[in-house]
Image (cartoon, rainbow, N blue to C red; front, side, top):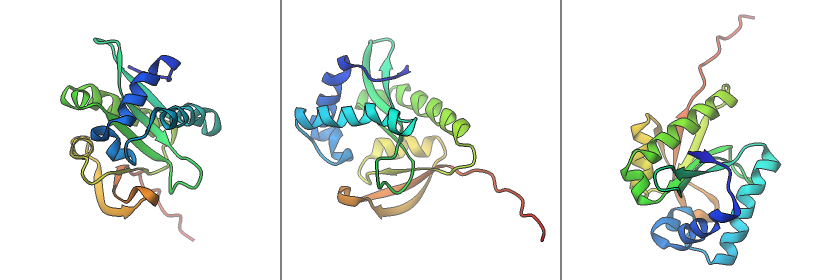
Length: 165
């Protein structure tokens, strides 16, 4: 289930962002103070941009298992489609369902815009999921202090016919 973040989700977020096995793909592990500020920015992003990143909850377990949505902090190269999940969510179809559902929502909200993402080149699960839904990789590009990331196209809008002059 996709939903907004709540204060009760902080334990998940701090654990996810504090664990190098998951956080390494998002700039590296951070302490709980930084995780609090980062989650606050994720929540505030919805107000500032009118779009953002959802918490993804497993209805069977009643726990947050990941995140998916659009992210465009100040100075970012584009409106980015992002996702990240605990390994178990990738192994089940929870990650796939959440990404497909959110991507459909994004395409409906921004039908004339290309939808891009940047995935850490060692994040095999995220890259595999991108391939599974038909995304196209365009090679590695530098992403600020986060190092090289694979630029991925999740959606290209249909070309409009050129008007004759």
